Image (tube, rainbow, N blue to C red):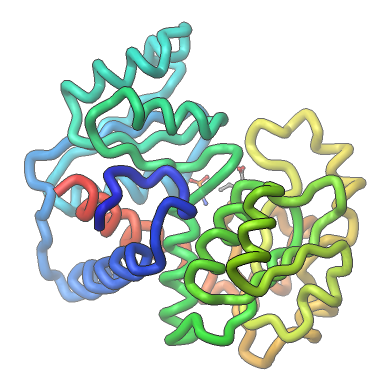
Length: 302
Ligand code: CP
Ligand code: NVA
């Protein structure tokens, strides 16, 4: 792996993604079989959170512990960052104490600045633009269930948000077809869609039935992301009907998987029936956050 950081999936080659997934599979096997793997003994990961988290926080903290290191939970409200200390100063200070930083924040540029000014690996634990750790776990889960990425179609139904952006980057790089169904004012990043059209099979439409037809993997996420709570009512109107339900699932391929990054809003972007029918892969996906992120930490911090 030649990358120093994990800022967004667009920065990685398909070979580098495969390297992460292969190591993640190995770490998962070792974990299940009680084989210790303290590749990061004595190392410290700082975990900066400007937004809430269940999966990211717990999987990074237990992940670094299982690798022999220690994780420091750093709530942005408690750091001087929350009182206006610039990212570029925070980066240079924390680089002198820590061996790596995972950050969850709003602006992608803050994550890029942390990497530019710091001297240790930076891992993006979600921004408004991207969620690369989640999509590495998603790709790991897809490969686990389907054994290949070849000839697979992933359909994302809902907001063209951080999840949609990272799924486009990750799935197109691995050779999958990607179809997005979203309202026209809520499309994914325009530059990323243009890149996807040039580099793979990609469509974006308001027609959910057309997008979901013959899908092998259906993916959805909340209508209002963290930081958009004030737009919730407006978004509920705009996204009405953009729901993964039994009617749309009937149009997919046999053995179609359903994935959700979680947390899910049942009755909005997905029905309880679809969630529960696909709980097997959805919670395997959540577990795979742990293994995929441990692989990322080993490859960047060892
Ligand atoms: N999917 C995900 O990142 O979950 P958390 O917000 O709980 O970390
Ligand atoms: N799009 C969601 C993903 C949460 C994991 C958000 O940003 O809130």
